[in-house]
Length: 209
View 1 (tube, rainbow, N blue to C red):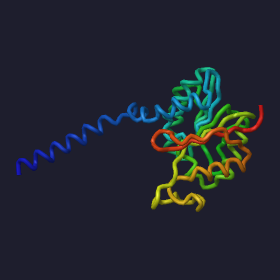
View 2: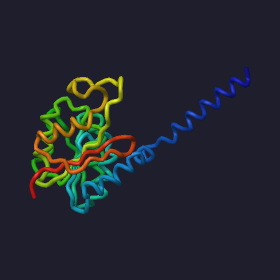
View 3: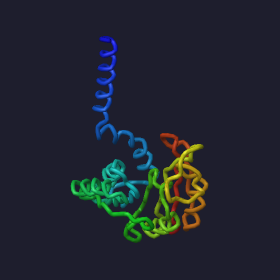
View 4: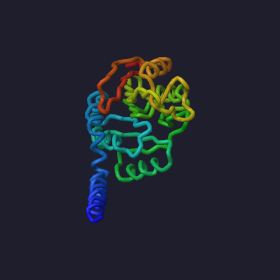
């Protein structure tokens, strides 16, 4: 009995210890590899204007804001109200971040505002992808870059509610991302199949200068 009690207490202590290590800073480290790749892929530099569509809690928004510096701008969008509130807090503390409420059919980014836009594990949640793709196209400057990071659907996984049936499961096949965004006017620049965490990334460009 005593031994069983000690084992339960040890297990509880371990769980509490692990929970204590999952701090916001530790969580941000999970995005470090993504941020390092995006800096190079999207050519972030001082003065760049970047869009983070479906930014969540803003881990990559902060990385982008650091890369573009005080003369740059990061537009950080969210549909979820609670996450948007966190982005608004970030914007209040960082003068080069602007938080925006996203719509189901529109990013709500200003027209031709961004040198680059990225979406991390967002595309497979879009219920109106054609409309959002058109909005992304409108929001990029001519020659601007779009990076879509997502994952292939796993067999037997559940498709998010409201998304097109061709998603198959939780995720979106890479070829569908390419088909839909090229239909919206984008050109494929590069496909990256070895993105961290078994994700893929497709880099697009808006035709122009």
